[in-house]
Image (cartoon, rainbow, N blue to C red; front, side, top):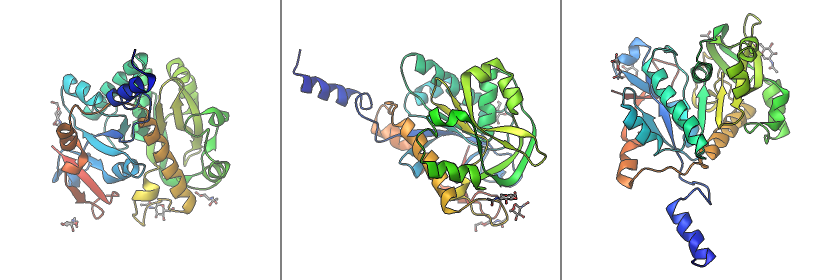
Length: 310
Ligand SMILES: *[C@@H]1O[C@H](CO)[C@@H](O)[C@H](O)[C@H]1NC(C)=O
Ligand SMILES: *[C@@H]1O[C@H](CO)[C@@H](O)[C@H](O)[C@H]1NC(C)=O
Ligand SMILES: *[C@@H]1O[C@H](CO)[C@@H](O)[C@H](O)[C@H]1NC(C)=O
Ligand SMILES: *[C@@H]1O[C@H](CO)[C@@H](O)[C@H](O)[C@H]1NC(C)=O
């Protein structure tokens, strides 16, 4: 038996993240089929820059997860990165390649948890909707029209014991529940009735907030899994800091910036608990999103910039 400090040193070198936190987290963002003709001239799939900046702002680097790779390639990538983000957008949540790829990472994250590996997953807007499909294996969405409207969250009693918001400063929770600082851009959602009426969903997640759409229909707006590091929002925290179209309701107040940064820090800190890494520096370098050019898209979309693939 070597002296304890040597043993610890060896362990730390072999598996950073087991004893200490992973200070070089890398999070995958799933690319999505372009659903807008003006984007097609640039590529078949894309990632909006606001999701990339959201993660980078909290100290993570980003790897694009391309569509239509083999299960083996996704398995290898899963074991190289520290978390995954399912962005918003506009593709079919049952039949798109985006949905298929997200499903592979979701199932790998659940499997990993049973061997003690912490692999966080974040869903925004369509990402939340897709997570409800992956967990319930049903499409329980209905029409909830909240397009271009910023709302205060109606927080539930689950917030105080949640991982996502349980440690948030009281002033931040007051702001997010009183001010119009959560941006909504969706036509579909899941009602609390449908959510709680589905046993798979209600046992897997807890609801941290709800909202009412423009017709008064209630929808689930923030969720977190009870036993897994899986989190999702129907609203868009990334737009508060990274989208600027003046004809759209993007909140930019100091408190709007605060909740956006708070959630980015929260999720990236979750990814620090995962010890995965690429097999060598070359593979890591060539996988990072820095290898792709960023395209100016503010004149053709609500995103300032976007990355295009394939
Ligand atoms: C993925 O595969 C589908 C089915 O073969 C195909 O229609 C689609 O164009 C492919 N997408 C990309 C980005 O290659
Ligand atoms: C939030 O927006 C609604 C309209 O969408 C408005 O009636 C309300 O006064 C706003 N609340 C605050 C605190 O600005
Ligand atoms: C979006 O909402 C903002 C603020 O309410 C409003 O000024 C703007 O006209 C709306 N834009 C569209 C495209 O509906
Ligand atoms: C948008 O801006 C880019 C870069 O300035 C330019 O090349 C492109 O032609 C513009 N597109 C439209 C539709 O205005």
